[in-house]
Length: 362
Image (tube, rainbow, N blue to C red; front, side, top):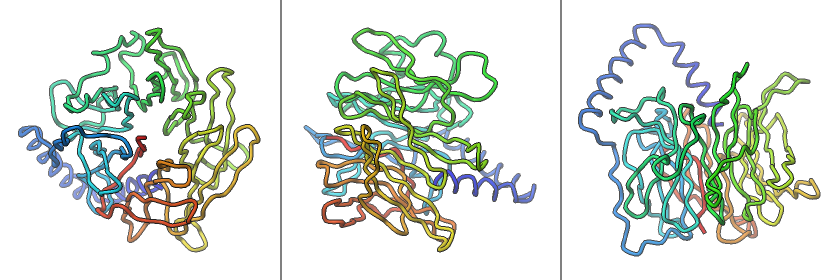
């Protein structure tokens, strides 16, 4: 839904008159110049309590500059959320484009994607995306290249969507095609800290949305857009890559949008969502996919919600997800807890800020 709504907003922007567009541009430019001059964001970084534990917390990004669920394309600040006490801890506090935080197994740092220029505090989405490290608990930010060597063929291209493995802190991320390409493609690279070397996990991935590791680091799964040759319609799919064999298992259905969650015991928790054309409302379903048997088990139906990201909680009987609804063309996105065993839904946030890239930290 976030992809559809962003497209709709862009179409609405194009329908404005030239005069209105020029006025908006002037006001935005003045605002950005002011922000750049003072060099601060809208939210102050949190002071983490002494002996703060990241265990049993949620990690995600939040667009605190957008109001009423509307994004200003300034994703976002990295937030650590205590779902029990409902407390937010802002780990970044700037106006840069920050996405896809991933925490190390020793809880000493977070790797994330960001667009940030060397000499300006103004958010510029034309700036190439690179990978950065957020030290914990100091919250100091440094380029990833300060800690590991980035190959020359990756240095001048966009790097995005970092995900740390759960055991040895291997890092998978996406990079633009470094060869002559006739169409936009992405390559997935894995950095092995023990060998201090990279290897190509997969190439020619189109429109990849996100990556993640299985709990035992035996699989990498990712979601991506594709175009059906039979129906000429765009859809979304999930691909599960076996690291040892290099084989892929693809789950796809062009009528739904998929949000992969987590692989544990060779099973993938995922949600699929769509707009019901008959009722003009959102609806979502939660499934468990058995990789070996290639079968899907429906765990829950959630009418009037559109799930963006779903993850397991402390046990396999509960999950957390980011979900929204579409009311008066405003996209309200909040965090929910759902008991798969009791079929009970609890809304944990109600602030109207758009959220994404949810992770549960064990």
